[in-house]
Image 1 (cartoon, rainbow over the protein chains, first blue to last red):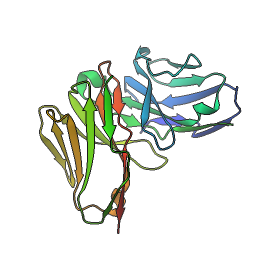
Image 2 (cartoon, each protein chain N blue to C red):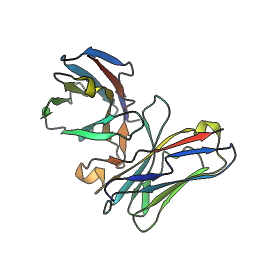
Image 3 (cartoon, rainbow over the protein chains, first blue to last red):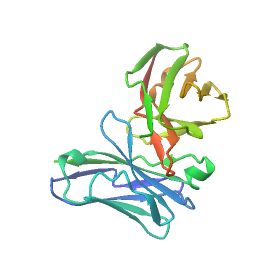
Image 4 (cartoon, each protein chain N blue to C red):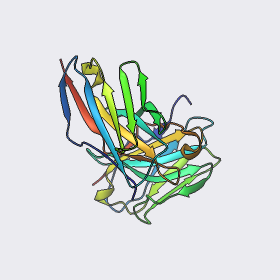
Length: 117
Length: 111
């Protein structure tokens, strides 16, 4: 597609439920990133994919968080047993190659606003 | 740990003046720094990249400097306009390929 697409744009869920957030990167982009942004805060790194593998998943806050990427394209971030502190905007970004290697810039989606009641 | 810090206080300036935002990094030496703009309800948008061997980079009314001695980057918007009002984020690569972001500085340009 023309840009990074995230769905849903808004998700309201009850505490304890599982949620799945989807990211569709720009076609051909090999690197994909998930960040979390709480109200008025900066971007907190969660996980980074190069192709289908995740060289760095150090930012995942707990084992309730997991992410996968299949076919080197779409990625899903899953949060199990959601807690109120999980409420935030979850941003996905992609780049055409590894930032470490080529000084590439990130293209962001508009994010999923997650509200846990 | 690798850290990027920006002034979390909002910056309020009058239209036509130059806005200057600061980004400081500690505990590492990034090969480059990037600046992004974020509007409410949207994802960040890339503005400029400056490499460690570049002192200054310009793009239209934007200017970025990179001082490796001070471990600091300055981001300038000249002849500022109300449409420049947004949050500006500084970012640099960590040692595992991820991009580390500062908390951002909100700029408000008043007409």
